[in-house]
Length: 211
Image 1 (spheres, rainbow, N blue to C red):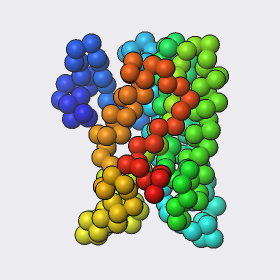
Image 2: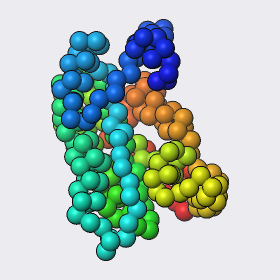
Image 3: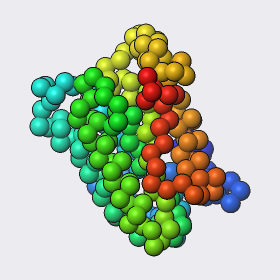
Image 4: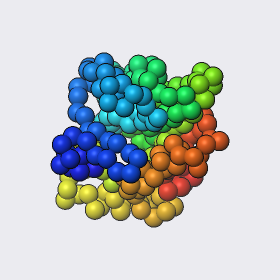
C-alpha cells in the first residue's frame, strides 16, 4: 500500500477512494489534523493501532518500561481519539486495537495486558458518548499474528519457525493469524456489514481465547 501511494506522488486514487500516506512523529498530531481537514475535509474511519510490547515478569518491570507501555498503548489512544473526534463525520467509525492478552492471562504480560484492557474500556464508554453523532466505536483484539513485532519479543529469524509452531499448538485454528486477516476484520467492523455493531470487542485470535 505504502509503495503504491508513494509511486503515485503521495496520493492513491482508486474508484471513489483517495488515500495518502503520511509519516509524522506522534507529537505532530495537529499537523495530521490540518492535513486531513485540508485534503479530505473529514474522516469516516479512524483506527488506533499503534502499540508496543515488552514481555517481562511483574517483579522485573521498571518504571520506565511501565510508563512507555501506557504512554503508547493507552495514553496515545485516548488522546488520539479525543483530538481526532471533531473531524470524524457523523455516522463514522472508530476502531481501537486491544489484545487477547487483555482478557486472557498469559505469562509475563501484566503491564501490556493492563495497557490494552484500558483501551477496551475506553471504547465501550465512547460508544455511548458518541451516541448523538451516531459514531460507532468497536474494539479489535488480535491473538498472535505473524508480524515484525515477533522480533521485538526476542524471537530471532532462526527461532521463528519453532516459536510459530509453539503458538500454533495453543490456537484451535492451528496457526498464527496473518495481518490481512486483521485488516478484513477491521473492514467488517467499519463497513455497512457491521452497521448495527457498536461497543463490542471482536476477538480475531483463531479461538485462542477458548484454549
